[in-house]
Length: 260
Length: 353
Ligand SMILES: Nc1ncnc2c1ncn2[C@@H]1O[C@H](COP(=O)(O)OP(=O)(O)OP(=O)(O)O)[C@@H](O)[C@H]1O
Ligand SMILES: [Mg+2]
Image 1 (tube, rainbow over the protein chains, first blue to last red):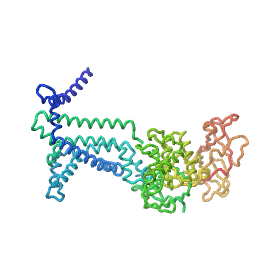
Image 2 (tube, rainbow over the protein chains, first blue to last red):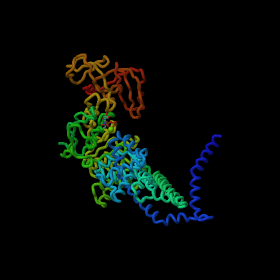
Image 3 (cartoon, rainbow over the protein chains, first blue to last red):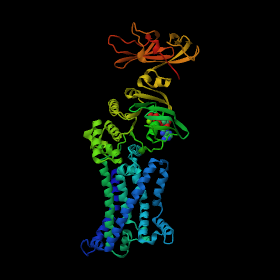
Image 4 (tube, rainbow over the protein chains, first blue to last red):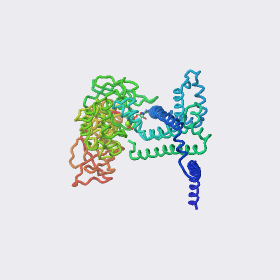
């Protein structure tokens, strides 16, 4: 009896998640009347605005990842090594982006960095790009920090650091040659999550008026019928691709347990 | 000044002082063990030599050079940890090469040196393995090779063997000693295993609550313990509570039985209590055993330890153990039997507290 309920719940769950997807995919293929075709996809891929915004967002994502890694890995490492008492507070701070809406953050940015402020970042496209990257890094912080911190837990940070120090290594060498390689898998999973977040982000990019993928999706959705569905499937594919890569990388990790 | 000299080293964590005025000079090429119970400050002193802790007072000199202002990575010290601490992302070769790479050694020189080091620990065939593919003993040998590869002035080992099982522990400690002598490297070895310390050290520092109770060769430490703590911590010495009868004549009583020491007892009066140490192998109950002193007591137990038989004797309120070699021709005494233990009075050592 119990089994039936379990199976029923599972079935319901599967349908709940897949039906809309199936419906959307189905719809995206129906642009040509009366038959299935990839017309909508061809349209989307052929649209120069798609290529432009997608490239822009991918570039932003890559910079965000690099910035996030450079910010989070040394921070999480230092806190584990020297300030373990601060860990709960830092963890709390990294969770803030989950409770503070992106729109609040971006309004704060605009107020602080507008053209008549002490640091007029929004005055140029380049400055705004940097600002947007900071915003993305903030949004990705909860995931990035958690991933890296979990990675650090699997190695004996203190002893490895001392071993490296006694062999003459300085902080930069320790971070680059010992710490980073040992949390690489964690860093990669944080990176893929960051990528997925940046690709789909709308609020910040729209309010900072940058040609990102998120606002493009919104624009298309407001004006077309079939293309948005195709675009949604594409975006969905990218996200799941990222999650798949996380799985792949963590499986790869299992063949080389890091514990000393 | 000694090659490695520690002068008036103190260390406090907050209000707790864990090392008190520690003084010691270690000569070049010497193998010194720090021996003591858990929490007595062995690791703390080692970490101060390595630079991981800053002394609250005192100075550390290596080869005449003050180490006080030097960071750990500026000191020329090799360190081996209890938990091996090999870099998990590097294979054996790269682990051993790490210090050399950091120092900017050329690739050909690194390869030569790594080969040489792996030869020393007899693990050339495992150069491509990762740490998780090695046994504990192999990992610790790699850690030793890694520490030695950079030719440190001083090698520090913090209980390097305590995570290993008994057999490997013994073979590896002999290997460490042999490599140490081959390279002539000044070594400080921390352990709480007295047998380990006695078997491989040139000198031993017996530590008790942040102080050095005694510094001496294994022979001195074992045979002439300076304090009651050393006597009880090192070996299985009997500590006997006796009463002073006549200090000038050196006569005492152990459980009401008179015994005369070789020398007069200084600084004590008749009726005072005095602690004496007697090694278990110093006495015998065999017929016609030699010795100018004797005490009788009741056998409490006998235990068979292989080559020796250890018998525990009750004398008054003291329990005295003594060992005799196993001999199939002699049957050990039974519990409850009364026997007389003969020994040389000079083997009874007066212990200061
Ligand atoms: N970072 C620290 N902060 C506070 N107290 C410490 C710290 N490190 C060590 N202690 C204290 O100093 C004392 C000596 O510690 P230490 O590690 O030197 O002992 P040990 O002789 O190496 O013992 P063991 O044989 O257990 O390793 C202990 O009481 C310990 O609690
Ligand atoms: Mg210790």
